[in-house]
Image (cartoon, rainbow, N blue to C red; front, side):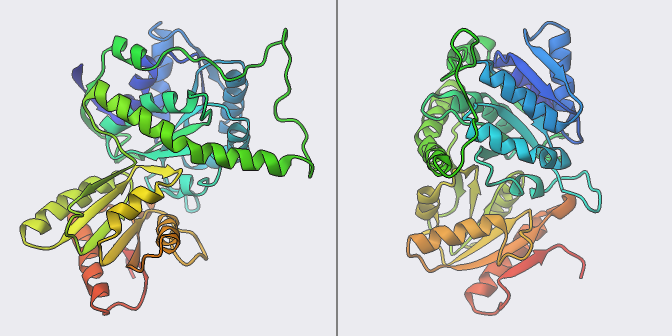
Amino acid sequence: MRVIGLTGDEAVAYAVKQCDVDVIAAYPITPQTIIVERISDFVANGEINAEYVCVESEHSALSACIGASAMGARVFTATASQGLALMHEILYIASSLRLPIVMAVVNRALSAPINIHGDHSDMMGSRDCGWIQIYTENAQEAYDITIQAFKIAENPTTSLPVTVNLDGFIISHSMERVEILDDDDVKRFLPHRSPLYRLDVENPITIGPLCFTDYYFEFKRQQAEAIEGSYKTIMNVMNEYSKVSGRNYKFIDTYGIEDAEILIICMGSTCGTARFTAKRLRERGEKVGIIKVSLYRPFPCEEVIEAIKNAEVLVVMDRAVSFGAPSGPLCSDIKNVLYDFGLKIKILNIIYGLGGRDVSQNDIEQAFKLGFKLKLGDIKDKVLWLGVRE
């Protein structure tokens, strides 16, 4: 193991280089472009024995990945924002065909107006596409989760595509200290792919056939069962990787939840700022805590319930808007979990950081203060926009 300086995008590209990928098909889009630029360098230099497919759009990129994956290849792509939106049709095909594609999504705001900076609008717009979805906090996690994603996706009991999400510019373009595994350790952790099925002219099969009212419903039920059943695979892979790397990975990560009255729940790069702020507030005697949600789909219901069960107020922070809905996407999931488990905990939903608006320690401290106000009954609105100019 060695330490090098990498941006989040470069960390993903380096992980892909070590994962014995066969085919990369991608179209550049800010702030993801560096990932595919670095990978194309690795291919051109002979550092990866892979085929790099230059395509005319993100729709074509994922279509090419589907064809390659169906032939038994290990494949990778990456995108962001409008590129993910252009892929939307093909996202559902990849998951429905149970193809273990890995895609890095460098989260970026959707137009209009045009914005190239980070929020979670893009992936939240595709959150029901049937892909396993994992969010990262920093460049180290972007590297580690990318390697794990291939093993999760290719497990024969799972066989589903995976997105590795990293916040645009905040993670993608920030250089950090990243601990890199030895190539041999990655190869032992991630053997060459053994496909569950593959297209073969000598042994023809049909995938993705026309299917009407007779069987479509049953296919969707099987797909839902597959992603629900992926919990065990994801847990096993994270545990195995923790032993290889010495870094612990879980569905959620917590700080200060044992006696916290107010808990902030968030995803992505915000979690680091929130954790640092919570530590500072706890030194002042305030009972606050943090829950970082890493695994977003399938949603880790039992782990979340165990972490929040003793809190008095939950402040759920969404870096995306569900227009016309009672709350943001992450908050909606938390509310569903509370209802299903019969817990009555006050919830404040905070919309924040849209279009890359900076999130400071002061903002997080303000979020905790709003949580204490809700506890006292001093807030009527259950959805607040933090850091917006009124």
